Length: 567
Image: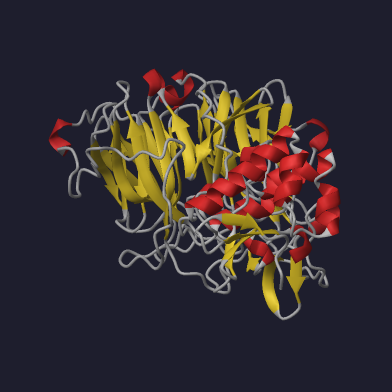
């Protein structure tokens, strides 16, 4: 008896949105000041723990003294958009301000040796775009006007593409910038996509009529200025965030495949500069990803090289989907093998000697607006040092980056424990279930799993003939056991499993009927088909009442199986 949704006309928005994705998922136009959002419920990482000392940034309450930090050897940089600052942290998690920001950065990039931190101003910079180079040893920031696009490092030099598309602009740690003329002039919106030891990757947009929307060709360009195709067969790809590995011989990037305003998906790609070996990784399979209900629309966020593999997070589209922490799912992938790392993180990264950084789901930088297609999300940055000590470095963080040496020395992380499977302790509005109801649900599930037809039949005296026939089959008992893992909704002196049989929810943020985190999980668990409504936006979910069961409390305080939910 598979769960069926109530049938309505399926309508998918026909409006298509042309999206040019800039290199960094950390790009923001956030203003300093009020939050413009709210804290996400149930913040947490895989272990759900918060640091006992609660330390924050060096310039905020409770932070470690900045004078004790090892400013010569930072291992981590992070951005706080509202505070308009880039912060640095040493190996013990002691922090200090690296730079004040007048314009929000597109992205932050470390030089291969970690001696320079570079970033570009956002496109909307009122006084013109600048490139910023922070010399770590000298504790000095150099800012130069830069009408340019994209950022990476070509060896030790920061590299970007001239706005006219005819040259690479190279900025050494000291001395004058150099201009490397390219073998041909590139079209508008081309940009440096990632750095490398002997070459940088350059993204060149392809005409939509030639390759489809949002497709690009990738080239490599070295100090000779010659453009060489980077992918076999000049394969077109979409391109979002890109970064090089420590050795500078391989890059990773995330794609952005758009099927409309709220139907985007992402893929992880890697390719070698020398061997041209292109590897493409689709979304992982398994209950951790499935329970987040992200198969049709999701973003792949903040990839970070971790040794030979990549750590990254999948998450919802905040403007289009309910952005509960449990929908952010993090993994480590190497050689095509995915390893689940936890829930509730916008990004996760690893360094040497067991150091770890987790950007947990927090608040958003801006309120939603009709024209916003993506919003920078801010989180709480939690750091673990080599001794295993955890501390919170700061909140309101949009992105972070370990130095290349730290990332290269990271060992593959251990997998998080699998998600727990048990009868719910609360209803679909987080109220505790009466113990007799929970105990009966557990008894029914145990009987279904063990094939105890006699017990099920004796408890199912009020069931319909359809349900009685189902519990005599193995498939029917499996469906019943799964149904009892859902979150019930209160109804008529009892509880209906699932609660979505009594009411529907919509996977859209900030509405009166937005799906809760538990309802999202139940939709995925029961494979409830999506529905649409001609009069309202969003994807709706509701279960046919014939596919439900109802448990009621009797006057003596015990619970009984009262058959299906009666409308």
